[in-house]
Length: 53
Image (cartoon, rainbow, N blue to C red; front, top):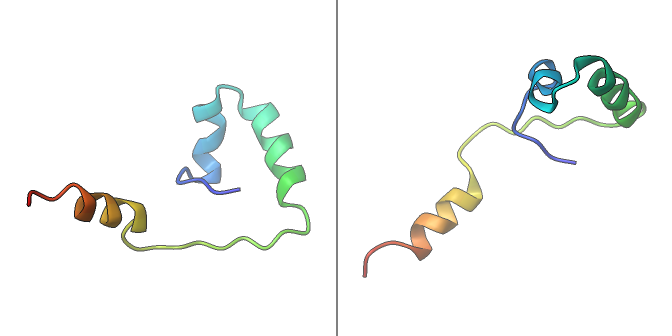
């Protein structure tokens, strides 16, 4: 699963912080969480594909 929304903000984003907390807790149990910081590769590709020629 990937998201650009922080866990702390996810409950408000999805509309129910209690249910979201329970769901995320179960999803990340025994998981490895990777945080990737930097520019978006998809945005980079999109800009290259849509650049004026």
